[in-house]
Image (tube, rainbow, N blue to C red; front, top):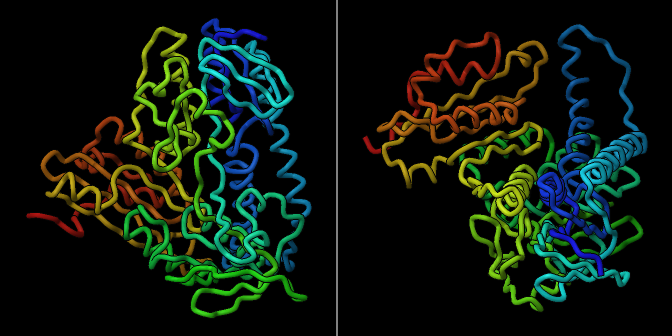
Length: 454
C-alpha cells in the first residue's frame, strides 16, 4: 500500500489546484482520476463550450458586416473542422494539467476510486492508497432523467460534445444556463432549435429583468421557447426522433438534448462506508474549511453543492491546501460571485437580484438602462442591451449588477472587483466614462428607474 499525506479523488479544477498547492507546501500527494484530467470545465464544459460559442457568433458577425461595407460570399460552416480544432485544444490543456501536476511532485493514478476507511482509497485496478487526509473533488454529473419513455434516445450535455455532425432539428429540454447556451450554439450554427421548459420563464434564480430581456432576444433570434411544457416521450422513426410533449404536441428531431441540471457525483465512492451522509440534494456536507463530518476527509467543488462554478472549486481547493498543509487557515467567501451565461446575447451578473436585494435592502434604488449598441446603428441588428445597477440607498453601496448584451460577462468581472471593495454609487458617478463604449452607461446612470420603500 502506498502512503501519502493527501489522496485527492478527482482530477478536475478543484482537485488539481488542491493537489498542486498541497505539494508546494511539502505534502506527499496522490491524485486519482478515472477519466481525463481537467474535469468537466476543461474536457466537456466551460472551455470547449466557450469555443463553440465563439464559433456560433460568427454567423451574426457575417450578417452585420454588410452594414459596414463588407461584401462576403455565402459563408459555409464545417462542424467536423470545428470539432477537431476544439478537441485538439482540449487535449493541449489536459497535457498542461498533467505536466503541472508532475512538476509539482504529485503522483497521478488512473482508475475509479472508492473509500474503504477514513484513510484508505482503493482503485478499480486493485491499487491501495493510504492518506493522512483524503480530499473528495469528484464534481457533478448531468442529472439522469429516466422517467419518460424513450429517455435512452436523448443525450445530455456530455453527449453534446461527442456529436459528429450538426443536427438539423433539435429539441432541448431545460431552461438553465447549460440548456440555453447549447441551444444558442446549435441554433446559430444552423440548426432549428425548440426549447421545452416546465416553467413560465428561463434562468430560474436570475434577476427577473434579465430573464425577460434574454427570453425576448432569444425568440427574436429564432429559438422557439415552449413554456409550461415537458417532454412526455421520445420514439425512433424513419425520419429521426418523434418527440411528444405533455400537451400532445409532436416535434420531429434529429437530436434531443436533455439539460435538466446537474447532481453531485458521489455514486460508488464508498461514502457510506466511512460514515458520511449526503444532504437532501445528494451533496457532501462540509464546514467553512471544507471539512466533512469525518475527521481527515474533506470535499471541495460541485460535489459539495455550495457555489457550483469552476473558479469557486479552484478557490476552495487552494484554501483547503493552505489550511491543512500551509498552516494558514482560510475560509472561502461564497457570497459575492461574479458569473456569466454565454448565451447570445450573453449575461453578466454579480451580487443580488432585485428580488433578493429587496429582502435585505428595502430602501433600494434601481438604475436600469436599455439601449441599442453603437455597432447596431450601421449593422441593423435589432437587439438591445440591458444594464442594471442596484444600490442600497442608506449606504450608497452597490449591491447588484446585471447585464444582457455583448461583453457583459467581462463587465461582471470588473464590477465584481468594485463590489469587493464595497464601491458606492457615488464612486461610480465620479468615474470618468470611456467613450464610446457600452460600459460607460454604468458610470453615467444618474436617475433611479425605481425607488423602493421611499
